[in-house]
Structures are given as C-alpha cells and as structure tokens.
Image (cartoon, rainbow, N blue to C red; front, side, top):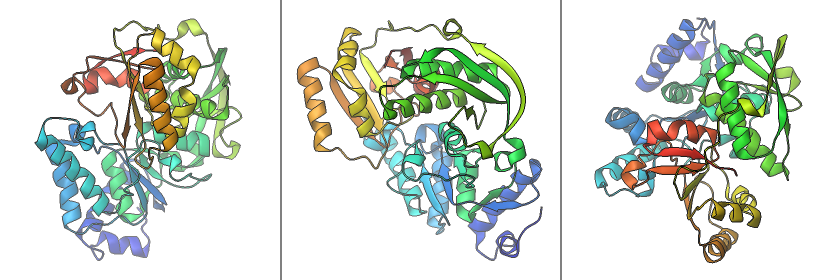
Length: 389
C-alpha cells in the first residue's frame, strides 16, 4: 500500500505507540480489501460502547488507550451506551464499568454531547465527504441521504481511524462500488413508522446489492417524513449488510451508478404480519434515536388516543445525549400523564437494544421501529411486538 510521508512516520512509530498500532490495523484491513492507499476523513463515529457488548476486554482496551494519552485527531462521536450509563440497574459494579467506558471515550476526545446513533443530527455530512462510521443505521443514512462516503465499519476500526484521521480507500469510498442494481417499487403508500420499518426489513432480506427504491412516502409534515425514511434505512441495514441504498429523488445523483434495471414490486401483503397483541403496556420510541422536537410531533392527541386503545401505560424514549429537557417537554409529559394516564421516561444517550432489559423487569416491549423489532429479543432479552406509530 502507498503511504504518504506522514503516514510512513505514523507507521514507523514516530507519532507514538498508539498511532502506530492504529495505522497498522487500518493498513492491514485495507490491504485485505484491495485498497492501494489511505484517504483522509473528517468525522469518525464509534460503536460498541455498551458494557453488555464489549465487556471487560473492551473496557480494558479503551482504558489502556486513554491512560497512554491517546487522542483522536478528527471530530469523533460515539454510539449510545446501555441503560447502566443512567444508573438504572441495582448492580453497582455494572454501573461503574459502564461509566468507565464513557469516561475513557471522552478522555480520548469523543464529543461528550454525542452518544447517539444519529450523529448526522450533531454534524451534517456533505456530499462526497469521507467518513469512518460504525453503526449500521448511521452509515446507510450518511451514504443514502447525504451522499457521503463511509464503509460500514466495526467499532474498533472506526476508533483506529479516528486516532489517525484516515481510513482505507476501498468499498463505499470509491464511486465504482456504489452501484444500484435492483429497483424496488412499492405498490402502497408508506404512511407510518411501522410500515416504513417493515418495508426496510423486507428489502434487506430480498436484495443482494444496493437497491434503488421508488416508494411513496405519505407524511403529515417534513419531520415525520424524515423519521419514516430513517426507519426504512435502519431496517434495511438490520436485515442485511448493505451500507447504502438509493432513494429516488433523495440520494444525490452524482454519488451512485445505476448498473441494471431489474425491477422488484413489493405489495403490502409481502411485509411481515403486524402483531399488536404481545401483552406489553410499554412502548419504546427512539431506535434510531429521535429528538425531543420529534417526540412532540409524534405524540399528538390522535396518536395518544390510539396508544391508550392499545393499552400502553408507559413510553420509554431514547434521545441523543445533547438533548435537554425543555419546558415544553415537561408540559407534554405532564399532559400525557394527566389526560391519558401514560408515563413518559426520557433516556438521553442510551439505547434499549444494547441493554439487558430482562434484568430491569421488561418481558415484552411494543415498538414501531424495525431495528428494535429485529434485535430486542436476542440482544436485550425482551419480546418485541409491532405497533402502529
């Protein structure tokens, strides 16, 4: 692999042991994927920050880096942590270890206001900007919506890339690999988060290459439209390893190539059965994260009446770390409690999927999010069921 003079100095250890280790990992991965050089990046996003995911070994690695003075060289954000980061468990040791993971990441330069699976809400990528992002739902969103260039990295690779400000030039970083080869046409209107999610889960299962999606999204406002698209893309990335899709009229045309025009029509009957009778009175919102502004739009009286009909008595909302509870949100929480007898718990910087929900007493959870529907049972120990939102 060709290395610039600065990269050669990194590789030979002139910038320290941590930088040397990081660039050697990136080079080795790049060589395995046929990369001939590295490319500078301007934003890295690290996943795998829940203690339930990385355990003592991951904590030891992060503490080792921070204790040796490691520091990221570019803007770096991180994924949400487990509910232990909010002190919700009785296990003090678990809470302490999750706190140490967060502390180590902040010490090496991760934005302390990030800890979200939607880093594009903190910093919007631009067309053809090179990134090194982990977190499947963020990767597919960056490539599809913004036309940025990032592979679907593992958390460790994203961390190494953050330390040197570079990644390998292969995969989604090269235009010739961003080829859409199957046209997906929906024969129905995508008019809710749940339908958007089920469509994404289905597309992820049937396609083998980047899909070109022609779908009719019907939303009351721009915010709801964005939430539905976000959930379609997150769901595609959940049931496939795809780092990108092409949305007709949305994805910048200069950032992909059409290879062939095989068309697949999708009827509503082909989506998964919608089960709203799982026996749970708890609703999960925020997988991917939603903002507090989006929550206000979601919880209109019409929707709250529907949730009450379904027997929902508690709503858990996971939001980005940077979100603060405004007076408007307090008013919303109070109104929902008094008028609908529904409690709302807002959890900033956290993620239900990477938490042990069974240990918190949750046996089943209702949600409209495809990612949560797919992962909750196996990763968090709670049975998921679909609900219209």
